Image 1 (cartoon, rainbow over the protein chains, first blue to last red):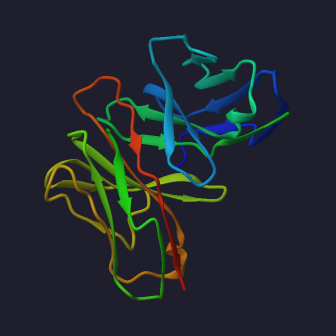
Image 2: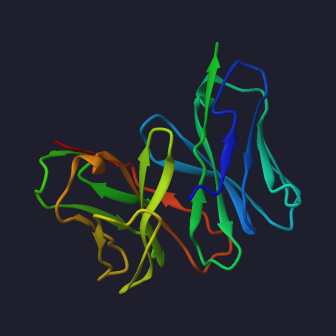
Length: 112
Length: 114
């Protein structure tokens, strides 16, 4: 079953603009993670936010988590063409050791 | 270099011909998992393993088998592949000791079953 649902499914912006992707989930979580996937390749971990955290930063990435709304957002500031990829949220449910459930992803296209 | 490797990277086979996709990690991770990725469906977990000789079904286990005889290896076995198993497969691993819990992914295996 799909735990995370990303929104929008696809996003096209110009270089230098900010990109915001949203993720909604259904059950209580221990943490929420964001991954990036370049076309047809393996996923790469970007950032993790725990259920007791509300915001986290890593370089040009900013993640927020609202557990009352069961939602998270990933903001990429000052986008570059190299940021073109698919982005997935993944949730680790409370009470599970390591299982992650992935959403369907947001495809980001950054044009020059 | 810390990594997860998968072989083969590409495979075309015919219905019913048994195949194995290998997965190996060099990070001494306890947890390993197999996913399949299909357009519009995201990643769905097939099987996972918490440690040697401990495996369990994920969300879409039908038609697949796994084994975990060694900590570093977690092969995915398709005893009788069918066309609906045509997909992009990923192996991943993570530490159960670390609270950070990120998963490391292999490069993927693109399987076509004719």
